[in-house]
Length: 176
Image (tube, rainbow, N blue to C red; front, side):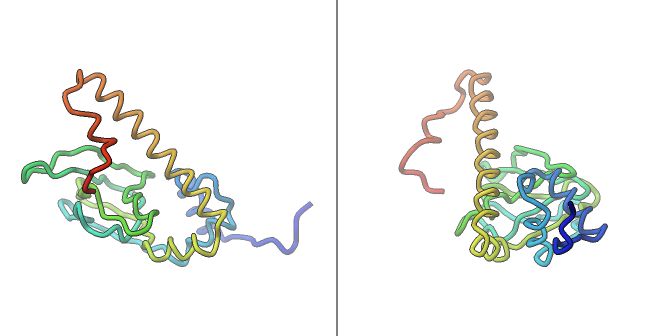
């Protein structure tokens, strides 16, 4: 039985929800929960070699790639070492889901053009403050994302024969 009082969504809203589901951080959310993000969405186009953000910048937004490629890199002795290439239907800037964070990598456009959906940090926090279920679901998605990254890190460490000191990752005196 259809509830006559339930919210119906437009075709364009449903297309955005489908995109959100592919990105992953939103996959546990219902449409009515995803709708909370619609007023905060910004569409941005960036061009080749344009910097989206630098390592050390405040984490002011969450980014999702509609088209194009974004290289994530870390700064090593005045050089950028690429650590990941973000593609269509992937997200980056995930630490903006947390409060008072700084970027840990630099994001630079690798394709001729990149079309991104952007959600500002302040909007994320406002949604989280007013919707604890949404926050819980997205924090779970973030924890799963970081867990997958840890698995990849450990696999890489094992295959590199301990080329770096993994114990530094768990150090208590880190300056992040």
